[in-house]
Image 1: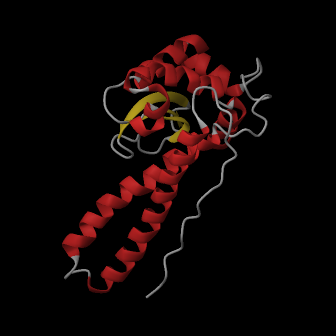
Image 2 (image 1 turned 90 degrees about the horizontal axis):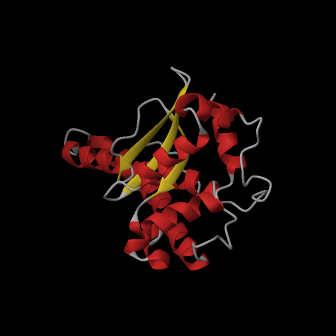
Length: 204
């Protein structure tokens, strides 16, 4: 039996965010760590049970369903936390006038401000999930979308450029349930656009 290659937990330099406390970030990172751990455990368990796949067909099927949740939880959080990293955050606070990403956003939505309003509206969707800005290489365009939980509704074949966690654990301790809108505003205040630009460049 081969041993599955393990996913590695990434480390992020996040502190002194506007509105989002270090305590919330610390607890949030523990949840991310859990997604990495569980994604690895599920792959290992699938490997073990696959020795007799016919006998374990039901359990394997349920593990495969769960793997999508854990894996996407891991990846979504990696995009989210990297965008809040303090490395070069002052230099990356805004997109420059020559930004390829800003140009692509303006081409798709006519202006950066119009896109931002649209994205924030997506983030206010009721329920837990993620507001995500994707790049579609096939059509060379950007798309906003809502993803339920961690994995339901991801757009096939598209690359996430920006991901905003809208699970309550991301903001309730600092903002209370009624502060959802303020959390979204503060997220963009804290956002390192330099990293989002990098994500876009890599997706092209």
